[in-house]
Image 1 (tube, rainbow, N blue to C red):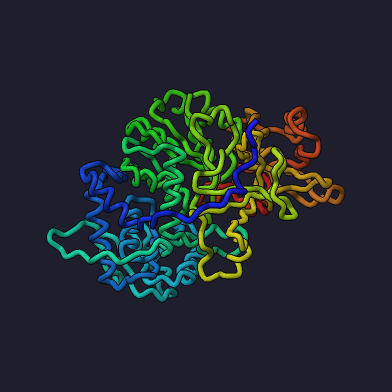
Image 2 (cartoon, rainbow, N blue to C red):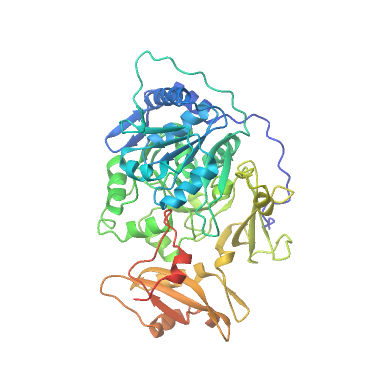
Length: 523
């Protein structure tokens, strides 16, 4: 029998090539097929040639407004194809894009822009009022408004002008930072994750090699572009391969299903909540979704009952595992194993090493033993923006990123995510992983949404609490929940308390906000 252990003992040799900068590889891709559709949003469709012309045009305008290598360019706005153009335009100048979470409160946005020390703030008309509420507190040197004018804001027209002089591309090194992504801050104030051109290049290669992206792919993305899930999981790999990327302003189950049918979408990405809400839409059962060859699920473990809903429609859902600090890519599940390895997030990417360690820091070599996931490779961030001590706590001296996520691997080396270690419930000395209990709760036909948290308990230290939202006209008592779990879970894993909400609180990335859950009033 082959050794089931992940390949954590093998040293990664130095890369034999210099990774291409974002703007360089996109320009080369545009050269190879300028007439091919590249980016669509609403009624707008830009070919690769159109998109490249806009990259050069916006880079020239940003340079005119003083953006230079190393500067930070913040963007506040909705999902749109222009976000990719801005990312590439900033990269052409050797600058960094800082996409802002438009759902944050004003103080939070100010804190991020100040922390990034952004040279420029760009917004669109939809968020002008929000941006106006921030600007007096910001020290940005340029305030730019897309495609329109307003008092105090310089217009940033996105349409290229015939015959305009184009600024030369700045020299970019592989380890220059291209993207500054701020974490959600659930464990403290948001931290800026630095992602270099080399990180993004390696991540693209990981995805291309794991999921076989090709130029004929039509990819649908409705995940937020202020997060690596929206930017880096399927979007940038699609553009590198020469495919057609369709960007939706946000997730809407009806629009999501309609776009798959209309455009014959072959690839898409979603967090479990998106897949859940799509599956619960009345049109899901009759929709023609046969064009889908790959649905990538990430951001949180996907409950097994939900995976089986898609399995019944012959739609392969490939769970992946990653995080901002790894430019998304850690483990990948091959599409052809999506059904035979139901619930797995796959094996390490070709350019990434993955291993598990126990509480004492020792490497785990035994299948089914749970531990913390650690990652190492060219896709791992060099660190957090201006936080060397925090960086040192997360990335050890050997380059291993300690993720804080729990997992195990099976006899073939396939990984299975347990949960965030900080969300683990310890009841009577036994470890309870919420995702395991949530998967069982989702099997009940009355349950629309489920989450599990811990609550202090005088006898057991912590007790398991089920927080449920029910389908219309449905309800359960605690006794009924426990009866449902009785033959599926060990007694110490079964909920001892039931809390009912109309809907579970979620953060901007679609993940259940367990901090808010613990503070939510009962209904």
